Length: 141
Image (cartoon, rainbow, N blue to C red; front, side, top):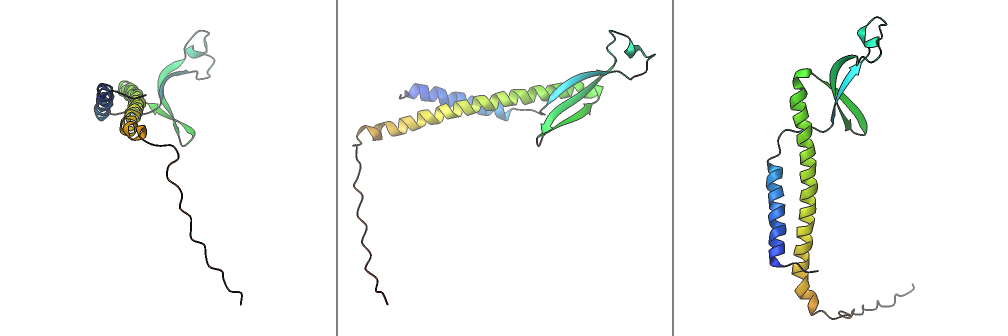
């Protein structure tokens, strides 16, 4: 399937727009920000009562490092920036995925555009392989 020059221009424009968006990526960090509540274990504490949420919230950032899950405690004052960093990471991942798709489409269209005229006049069979020179017989001394 050949692409028109207008389609190729549109693909190039999409790829370039995504490249510019990737250049605008801010601070980011991978992982999941989790709000946790815990029970202290004292039978007279409010957290031991049925229906009580427990002590908290405490915040943790969980992510994978070298195949292992790593959890970092996030202070209450850093929750908002950390939430923004994680959201920026997810936006970055989406941009990278879209950029790869757009770049692949552009490359496919570019290859089709450069190979289409050359393939039209090609004959089946190609050139013949030349024979290799035979080596001389060796003496048996």
